[in-house]
Amino acid sequence: MRAWTRGRGKKITSLCTSFLWGGSKKAKVKYEDICAPNDEGGLGLKDVQTWNFALLASALRSLHSGELAL
View 1 (tube, helix red, strand yellow):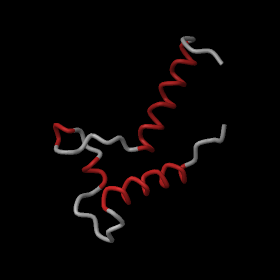
View 2 (cartoon, one colour; view 1 turned 90 degrees about the vertical axis):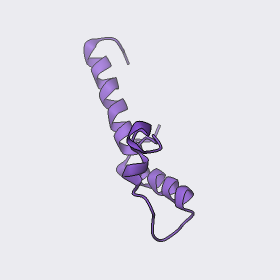
View 3 (cartoon, rainbow, N blue to C red; view 1 turned 135 degrees about the vertical axis):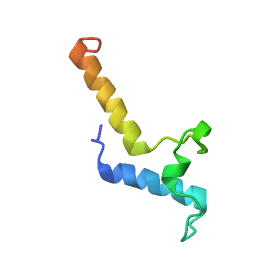
View 4 (cartoon, rainbow, N blue to C red; view 1 turned 60 degrees about the vertical axis):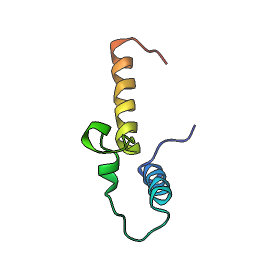
């Protein structure tokens, strides 16, 4: 399994924005606003880099507490 890199997260975000705005040069809405929860006016999409960091932190917490073993 290849290690996750910041470049991969940026590539995934780039693909998402290209899909959302169809390659348009100027976006009408910031990507951060689209990633906001529905009740805050966003679409509730997950920011890939933040989501990856949260999952890694959760896995480390599970390892540290003994809930998960390698």
